[in-house]
Amino acid sequence: MRIFVLYQNILMNFKVNPIFTTHTESLLDIIKAFNYSGILFGNGQRNIIKLFDLETKTINIKSFKIPHLINKIAYRYFRKSKARRSFEFANRLLELGVGTPQPIAYFENYNLIGLEKSFYISEHLECDLTFRELVEIPDYPDHENILRHFTRFSFDLHQKGIEFLDHSPGNTLIKKTDDGNYNFFLVDLNRMEFHKSMTFETRMKNLCRLTPVQEMVELMRNEYAKVSGEPARLIFETLWTMTANFQEQFYRKKRLKKKLKFWKK
Image (tube, rainbow, N blue to C red; front, side):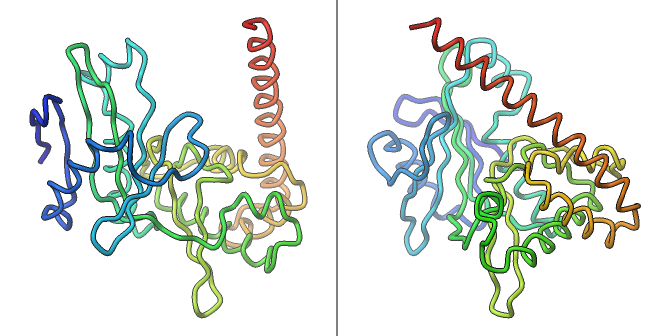
């Protein structure tokens, strides 16, 4: 159940995981003090992530960027906020047996116009690496084995109808298990779709943002063909074409942003 309260002159809507309801007051106090407390985690260019202590646990709080005017209204009356979607999608992933840090709560602050700030809270997960290390460090220890495990993990997502729209290098946390295997945990969850089934083209498109390194794509092709039964050549030709198209669009946008910044000076 969602709760609307007027907390210290702020209209707030929130939902807390039943496991953590005894910490509701502590969570409210942390959100109130977010701007001037906590430990900054990451670069905070768009959204701000901070770490806080909650008794014996370290929690991770993501504060989403204040939306522009139209989205303020949309998130109040027509659409779920990014924080709420993150919380709901995290719970859905866990129900489907997919790893993600334990969701704790989401909070939404409103003013007279609409949504002002929103926060997603989860347990902080210490990982051994992210997928980005595999892209940037070709000789990372056990590189090929990790990449094969990751490809099987991605295939499992697809089999379960999970289209992770931000399936990009920094959004999969990887932990090595005691028996030498690897577990994978999705983060940055606010853009996801759930399907009864996924077409081959949708599956390949879902993988095309991960790496521009041809050797990695070839290895992923090999492993995906093993588990899916799809022709390896078709997988590579489709995935490599989509990867090249994505890279071209990505760098085109980057060049455009650079030009706009120049003319704003």
